[in-house]
Image 1 (cartoon, rainbow, N blue to C red):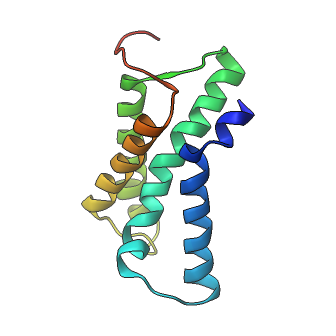
Image 2 (spheres, rainbow, N blue to C red; image 1 turned 120 degrees about the horizontal axis):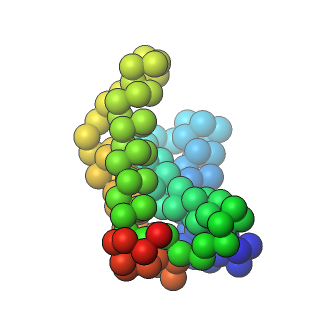
Image 3 (cartoon, helix red, strand yellow; image 1 turned 180 degrees about the vertical axis):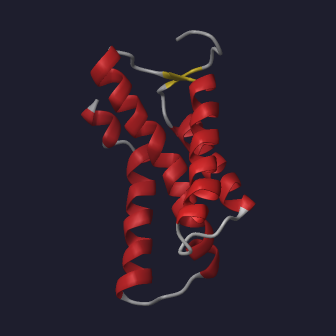
Length: 122
C-alpha cells in the first residue's frame, strides 16, 4: 500500500497542498482561486487514498467502490460546509467547496487504479 502513496494520484495533490500552504502562510502570497478552492480539492483527492489504506489495513480490501466514494464526498462536504462553519467563525460555507471536493474525488477515480466500478460489491 505504500506504493499507492508514492503515486502521482496522491503525490501531486499533496505537493500542491504543501506548496499552497507555504505560499499562503509563510510568504503571504495571495492567489484567490487557489486560496478558495485548492484546499477542498486536495482534501477530496487525498482522503480516498487514506481511506483505501485504512480499508486495506483492517479488511485487506484493495479497492474502493463508487458507492463508498459517493458517501465519502457527501461526508466531507457536510462536515466542511455545514458542521465546521457552525463550530467556528473561521470557516465559511461555500457550495463551490463541495464541488471542489467532488472534483478531488474525481481526480482519484481518474488517476488511481483503486476504484471498483460496482455499486454493491462491498
